[in-house]
Image (cartoon, rainbow, N blue to C red; front, side, top):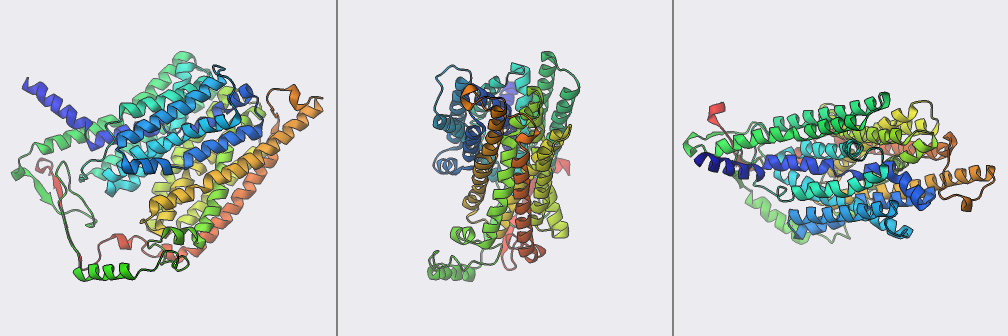
Length: 586
């Protein structure tokens, strides 16, 4: 009886632990990338509702708008608990995509275009609630490992398209309309299952914390490699329903392997809690004394003695501070905390906004049109799904690469991050040109290049904004930086790509002696359908690369210095921080 009571107490500890919360967040993020699957099911919306490409691309714009404007979820999170944020996100996800599924299956009357735009905007916006609920909470619970944490969670978002593709083949077969139904219920169910596991915990730090995250990273890389192997195998061999079921089962097992790592860490914390105080070994922290918390189930012990003179001076400075409107064009040095207006009106931000408009706008346009690109070049539905999976998998590698590698290059060689953005945009140009001038198999390579460059751009953008303009107003500034993405998508996707595609499709109809009224949906076939649009996208992206190079030149002196110096302790301040470890492991 005593043993069973101990087991129950441990299970309660496990489900309330930080590491189990990390595992739960991985699963939520693995279902939070439904927007990347638009290219798979968009052709069903187009054919069922009789849309032309311009109208379909308008839907794509509202999807991108919903996915990139996360102000509402942030404001709700300020005044409500995390479980409420996740619940609202689940409801929005289900309602938005379920209504789209009812529409394409003919179970409800054909809605107006604005209603479809609203449905997909609501569904896509739900991923911001998952980000705010899970991602932000994880960063707060692991402040010393926030960089690795962001890379991992965003990586799982990148893999989500490939993961859900495997599941939909296993559950529904090659019925892309049912994919919309899967997108409606699966993310909502996963968020609701873990709704009480995601919450802020007492911040503690274990000595091996970084090693644990690297274990999670290796497991996620293995999952990505498995998904890529399945993607290749599905091209070479005809998969039966049983084969898809086996593939999906292995995928789910790999998704749950991180649970073993989480359980192991929670067992260590559990054993540590049972140690008497006399056996607790206290050590000095091995690095960064700044804001380092405690460890292994022990409340963080931290004592900081500030400089009274400095505090008095700061009070005087605050009293004498000018209005933010009077200092708009008098910003501090790069790396210091800019006000929102100073940052938004600075030349650096304008350059970054243009580069993001060109780079991410073009990438979103390419990803959203992937289904129609495959259709126009004569690929079957199954192969189009493979293109989407490739984009998803390499999106993951792009996010991991840009996070870990850019940090290494910056630390070792002082390579400016905007220069890395330039290289990524040039890579994206190559992907666009492979679509504009296709050869056999080129769409596979283009999917890899576009997925990798698309995934790499966002972490670089967020890092550059935090480094140039400080962290004080970071949550507002990075959301403002993201707005360039849907704006670029609207102009390049709706006003350029969609209209040029429709013009080519109308030419083909005219050549066959038909008019627009004679066909339900406007479809273009052949390599010429996307030739001019993707030449334009490649040119725009190349211009964005040149703009990013200009920012790299402007900021090269800043990046040559120690950009993280102000986050370390300054001389004259005193702090005390401890790491607690189990003496039995010493």
